[in-house]
Length: 393
Image (cartoon, rainbow, N blue to C red; front, side, top):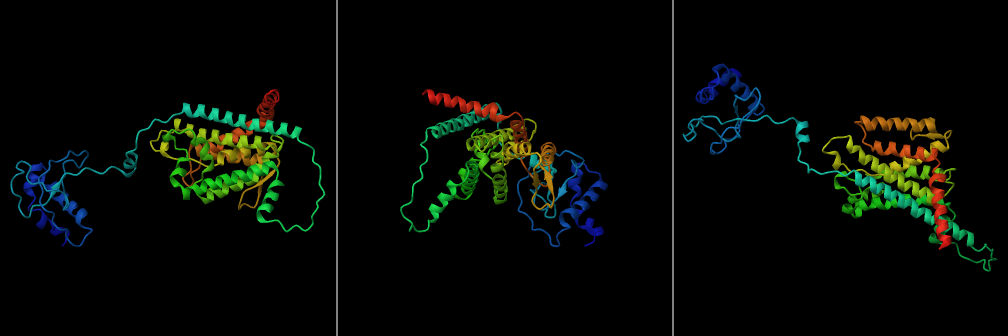
């Protein structure tokens, strides 16, 4: 059937309906032809007729198509509006008054989300308290270990009596290798093991694992700490643990930490909490209904703090990025990656989704802790305090 012959089939039964709708004759015919081509032109076979239903009142429509009906075969039928009880002729079309669907972007924004009140003061207070407790606890353990080392008996070598011992087993060999490691190396291995165990929870106990992530809408303060040990996938975990294995021992042996395992661990855990808090506080400046439900996690904030300390302690060191054939000076590399995260925090990147605020805050904490000499300003006074307390007890 050609388009010129459409009016012979569809224009005859519709004048009574259009007349009552108040449409001019020219617009009646043109709109009917356009509607037929749009609704039926994609199919070669006619759609089956729907069973008759009760007439429904028209819904108001906004826009330039408010006065134009649309013809289709899948919508409740409406006959003459002044007399809806009259029987419909067999060849009358089915007419309804549509509303234009909202744009896709607006529909996504209007998706129903529960309204929650995200807390900001409580996480700040909790983070400060938790960080203080971590430093107090680990400085106490450091003071206790130093006092034990003073009172320890001198080592007296013993002459072995047997020379026919069998080769050590795997457990004994692993224990011997572990005892020969430096304390800072043990911290790095322990943190890698803790992150690996936490990642296994995504397979063994997925519901519990989800509780470890920090979601601002849940208003759970302890997740600022637990989110340091969870990662999105194996690549995220492997990259962060590779950075931990490379930077934590070197940073722990710097003049700022002097190989002190307790001091290094306290710094790592505290910066993990504070960088997560900074990511949480960015919701004050980003007004989006979806952001409170976006979870965050990973050890990258604490690792950036270690990177900040490393670059300030060894500014002339050479750093190399994976898959790049050239190297960077430590401070130049740090400034470049901080600029990258600053731009990502302000404008964002479409090709990657990272916690730019956590990275940037971690780097600033590391630089400030190194420049302000956190060892003599915070750590050593706490250790001396606990030594006095333990000696007087």
